[in-house]
Image 1 (cartoon, rainbow, N blue to C red):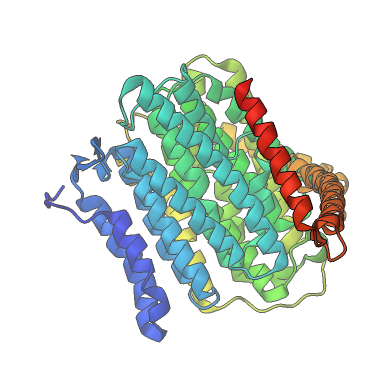
Image 2: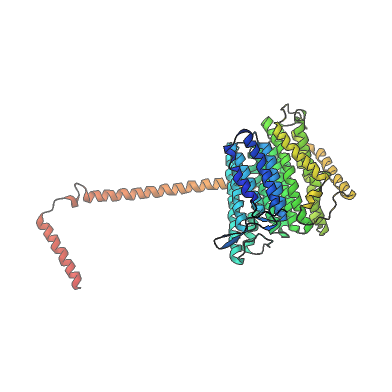
Length: 563
């Protein structure tokens, strides 16, 4: 490392640089969009290991820029994602979306460099604001409603996380981002708050609810940062927490099931995010060095191939205006390059040999096998077949092949194709040459992905899954149906409950207002009766009567005094 003192905080450079985007046009804006992530990437590797910029705040020692192997790995792929995402969005995204996306990316990098919980929380919430703005920037009514629901979920997670941080600080006096065990109120609350961002049950549905409503480029940005910062936080704060194994497995099969039922191509890929993050969460729960390396490597590769898949789907949406599989098909005829990139992403997510998924996800399954977790290992293998079914075959088959929909759209603009090309090359390059990625993983890697046994077994697994797909093709065909998920509770049930509560409180308010108005009217009438022009207290009284009344009052007062 080059020792620069003091270093420039990469996250701050990214966030502040994003604020200049609205002021620029043409080539200047393009230069900023591409140059800012590259500058941030350089700064990520220039920050020296350990605490770089310690700072005091309200008698608390903060560590806002703390470089670690895990943080540098995640920050690297976040900056890379911002660069390629900026290229993809350059000529199609609104200014609001571009600013929000870069603030979002910078905030995610800020989380990876946070050495204390206060800094982590600040960037965590800034990330929620940026991602909400990315969804809202799509400009549709559906996007506006989805952005509101998304914000409410993440504000809930942020409140729980903040409560956990306060409880942990009160109990221990420590704000360091370090390995913890979920055995106290504070750590349990922090774990729950992080899992909300990871898309863990029961709040998994927010991903498929919100991400597909963003613009094509907005969905690409959204797929990369929120869930992966949660994976990073779990990796450094809760490695080896057994509960994460079972939470991760639930997410794995939850994502597969709903993706297989889904008709919307972008919702298929959104549910797939939950599925893939489930693999990482499970590996973090296993907690060995091999498993943690697997979670980190899988997160790195996942950001690339998931973005590639969503870029391919976004290209289809841009050129056809259609999202549902029932409306698509046969697009390979006029969109062969987009189809090719989609297939490469599908093979990578399915861990096909010679792709990035093969050399990263296998670390996780190998870790389960090495620890003797037979049930976990078998479930992860079965899930790998499920991934090939819904993302590896279903997405490209129904969108680009299958029936001929009669649509003949052209290829998307050149910048979008260039962005897809970069990530396609990385998917294959990392698969063929995993050593550079293995070299920056948190722990030393002693693992060979390309053994005859592993390659043959993986090909057999994928071949069986592919055979099952085409045998069950009639059952796999989608119809115009809606799959109910937990989001039904806050989209329908809680909404109806709120309307009922509002109606009843309005009725009670109306009754109280009527009662109060009636009482006020009675008081006004009484006042008017006695003090009005003809009231008894408004009449002219003789002087003698007044003297009599004064004498009586004085006598009564004197009597009280004597008693």
